[in-house]
Amino acid sequence: MAEDLDIWVALLRGINVGGKNSLPMPTLVALLAELGAREIKTYIQSGNAVFRCPEEDTPHLGERLSAAINARHGFAPQVLILGLAAIAKAMVENPFPEAVADPGHLHLGFLARSPEHPDLEKLERLRRESERFCLGERVFYLYAPEGVGRSKLAANSERALGVVMTDRNWQTVSRIMELARVAGRSSATG
Image 1 (tube, one colour):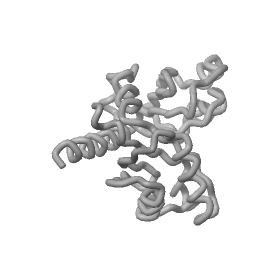
Image 2: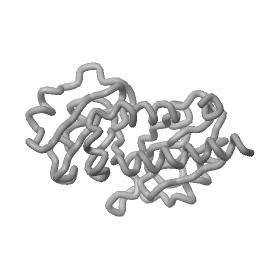
Image 3: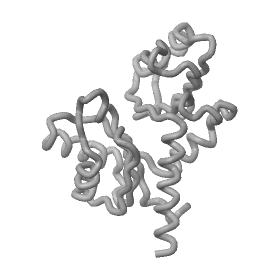
Image 4: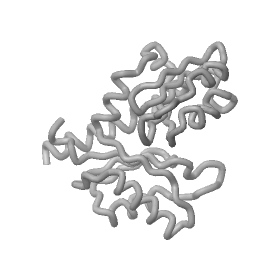
């Protein structure tokens, strides 16, 4: 995995949702390229990009990307930059392996930092009987078989955790990891 140290994943929060904060993926690719990224691949319109970049100060890269989007499009999305190891670890540590068979309802909320004082009791009170959640290391796992759209737990999790979070379902995380692995293989053969 050492050869994959320059492969990063950008998760943008709240873009292309309900007609707001429109950012076409070709524009995201161009902005990332201007910041030094290469071999950029995006997945769906919700702001997922896999790319190579020698940048080691990933929070700074996320801030620079957000600022570039704001300068050109008038909104500054939260951008979380993760290395491959962080995403792989989040997948391996999934506390609900049986829920992988329902990939649209198993969610990983990637956290900007570890919560200092998460209100897990509040989350437990909001939880429907069918829902399950677990706070991992900078990941909030949520299995919501009835969907997150009407889930009070999903709607209030970020506030109760007290830290910025961007959520992706298992299907999306799996596809992002697939793109990252392909990028790693292509560099090994190139």
